[in-house]
Image 1 (tube, rainbow, N blue to C red):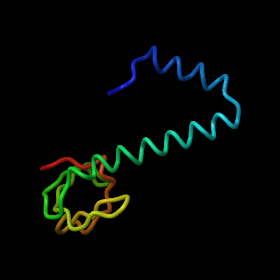
Image 2: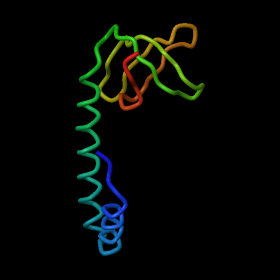
Image 3: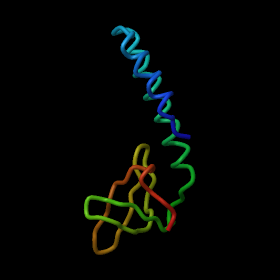
Length: 92
């Protein structure tokens, strides 16, 4: 789900009204939600699965060799081993 322009404008208005304590709470909510989404995405992958992503060197493909707490280790063959955030990965 993506936010529409009106929703983004509402967030901007709320940010303008927030104080430092509010920003602390907002940051905690943001980080918690981001971690939950990453875990959900990561659960869709398994060791040995072929994946693709766009990395520093452009489009890449490889096989998942390990799933860590925050990143997925992907063997891209001659391009080496990569630590990739799960949100960048797609099943190949």
